[in-house]
Image (tube, rainbow, N blue to C red; front, side, top):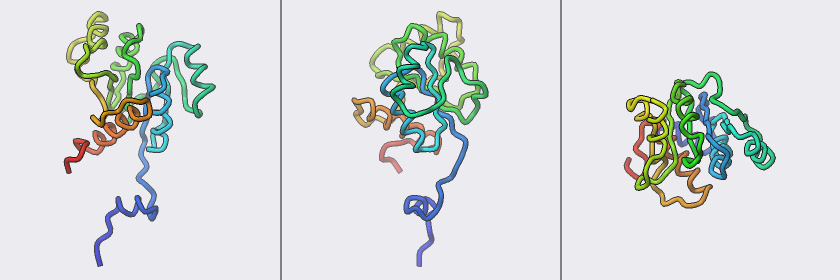
Length: 174
């Protein structure tokens, strides 16, 4: 007889997965944001789309499954909230990110390739955000799985968030 691993019991449907308060804020309407919110719901996240542009927000509302939408940082963000900025080319990147950094989020990241300049750093510096606050922003984000499509990028990003939440390095290191 062997001891039962609680994780195995969950994987085999013999026990409910642990439930916790998790919030995922996808910033800016994009295909990746839609997949993040959709897949994040399966991982137990309460999904919120933060989109300051009402026209873009309405297009997403018509196309995606239901989730909360807001034009600014949601009230009550705390240590359970993970924030993913899905478009680093937006003109409003700096002000939106500055306002999110004022919240008590667990994790904030901006999508972008590591060999490209990080536009959020310049945008935040121009707004007078101190370097130590800017340093809270993760970039690049997600696991390096060679993702190229919006669903793959969402999977890599969410896998990275799960690994970080669980204190794991991600990848195949055990």
